[in-house]
Length: 318
Ligand code: ASP
Image (cartoon, rainbow, N blue to C red; front, side):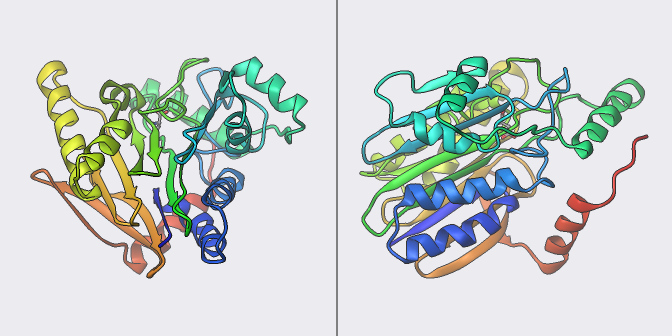
């Protein structure tokens, strides 16, 4: 059996390419790294890699992580600037014995020494988003942080290896140096090839309060199907946050076990995700939460057309 599950529609093209690697008997690590690089390289995805939205100083600081569920190797970078593919740097760091999570200048120095491609990640389009947001914040009291997504993936190859990985520009207008859940083991991702893996997207500050990716893997280890594990973990954290703090941020999770069974849960409307397995070409689904149950359906052609149109539509500075 083999398969990949990923957060958001943006993962589709990458997963389609990654599936071929798995089909040919390739390593899940190669499939997932390639898939995430595709997302990082596409300039119209404004929450990951090139074209990602900047922090409040108008700098694109990126977070990424890579975990091997067979060796339990973990590598991650946080608040890294000016490198094209944070996921590849994270994977490279996972091979080190120590110094596996590097931040900011330290991560950049490592990437430079290892010969990773430098690139100015701030696009003209991202600058327009930035200036428009500054206006919106003043005029309409729009929350500065809205507009963020992480590509998170879990993959299983024919030999039973599982990999989890993430990449994101984090919250739009975040403070310089802010790190979200995505590069943090157990929160943004976790995987154990003996069980399965999970990955998160949403408000990092809240996802971290539940170490939610680890929690889902733990529930799967206790015998829960990935779907049950995701629903239990998301519903519990959502409830705890509401009870103790009055509200819960966005929480959306995907998971796959080592049999290729998968699950998803969210506390928002319209969480899109992509799944492929040996028996199924990549499919884009939309999920929502109805009374604690996660309902998902295939995205229809109208939704799909509209998705690319809105991402690539001309943008003017207001
Ligand atoms: N979880 C990410 C962060 O807080 C953002 C997202 O996935 O929407 O940095």
